[in-house]
Length: 438
Image 1: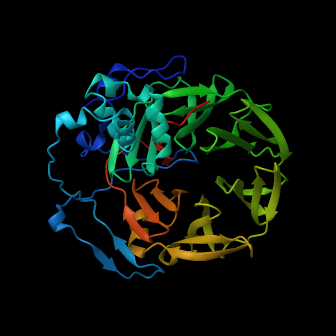
Image 2 (image 1 turned 90 degrees about the vertical axis):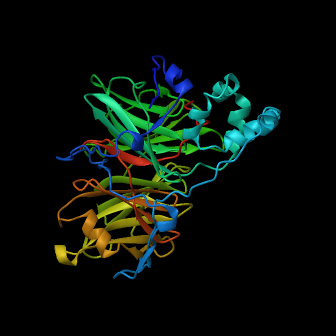
Image 3 (image 1 turned 120 degrees about the vertical axis):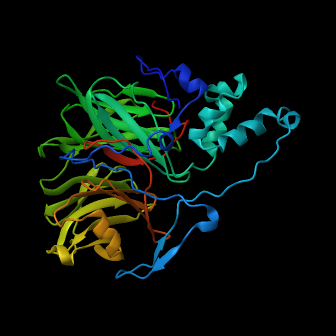
């Protein structure tokens, strides 16, 4: 088993020798029986996502269980069994004569994590990540699919595991190329991952591409304090923006700042009106940033294209214990939370915002057996985040991950081993070689 080696002192991302020869390794090969103990608290923006047992059955013995729980949706539990594909004899003389463009188009459709294994085939394939023609084809093909990125520190060494939902496999990505700061995960968008932290006493923001191991530090903000941040990537013009809202300690007097990678600078915008924030969680969809507020009750919306804040009087559902805003595709905005004052009456529900009526419309409920397995105690904390109409639930104490597909209305456990600790941070991640940090 081999991993990515080397580091990038300058941040330009030279890939080490081990990466060029072998690439990533699958965690299931090395840690199926290894589960780190989970305990204590963690970052507010984080949650542990641990191994959940899932027996892998052969295709002939796969089971599909259908029940009708006390919810709104029909439950479908899908197995993680992998179909056995027969070996195909490939003619060397035919493949050796493939035109360059056709070869690049074929390789561009290979899942990114498998590209590293293919680089050991020959010198030509070994240099494929530096080939502009390959990157051009790679940028035009559909995404490999969503992944879950888990980040934590083990003895002050950054560690990262990525679970590929299409391949249903965990991969380990060494993060030793990052500088030795005290930083934490902000989020991911369009193949890039954003971190913020302290280099001594100086607050800094960092953006990197885990696949190419390129990274760079963003310029300092005008008001360089620890801020609530969110990153947005625009793949059309190959750029990204980072939005800094209020101070993490609740200082509302700071103006909103927006970093534009095309200009390589921060711009000052309107100060967010004085509100009592319900949570530090933010959701971005349709060029708008949303935050929950208690006073006034509803949402604060920041229009990135206009540069100003606006209040939306969307009242929360009654008896809502804790709520998370989750961005879906296009203009869809979801609210996920528990309902009920007593443990025996609690349930997890999902609402969608009706933008025309400023109302939350219930659209789904978590089946009771999943709710009991995810949260055994009424006061147990959980985390929730989403991407492309997929919503992921993680439990701080149970070390479990549950996935809900809004379009298919399917609930499924996330299987595998993540080798994480209590301070793990999790987000959705889209692996892309063409994601630029500039």
